[in-house]
Image (tube, rainbow over all chains, first blue to last red; front, side):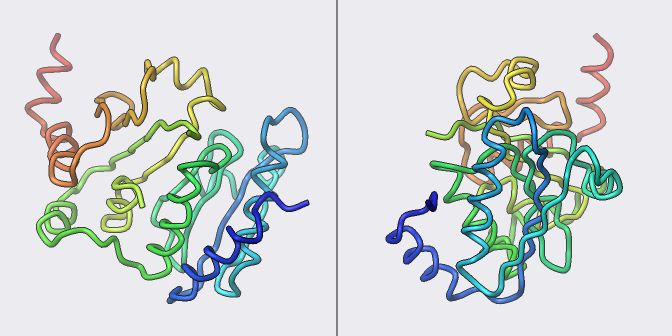
Length: 141
Length: 75
């Protein structure tokens, strides 16, 4: 049985009609001892199936060490949202509830390659010359 | 899209993680996450709650200022 209801899928497909460039979801998981691991993978499979612009790659956190290092993933489940460029956008955990909307937004934003931020912010952000790591803690509700 | 993710699109030096606190309780405890959203900048500074775009960005820029960093390192 799917995690997403038919009416959810209709809405998602509608939102994804406007996707510009291909988006790749790079998912890291492990088979055992992972709460919500199976759900996270299934959810992403269902999301990826809604548009031919979205592809999903799944890696094993314990085995695919090269990819783990490439994406700097240090815990699972982890999902990177990227296009040809890896912007450093990651979701850790099951992106359900409120975060599901943020995942869809990230896919749309990454597809367009545009942040949608104001000009003043864009200028200030471009001036940053040191690494910045932002960790936003959320809950599903 | 979360502001943090928007920022990451604009500058490749910015990495933005969205973390489900309940699934990563050790990390949430490490960063004293009792209410969400709570944003940690470079494993040290904190932004509590949701802020408008300009305030959120200013907090990040403040954190990156060398003078501020030095005073924090001092004591």
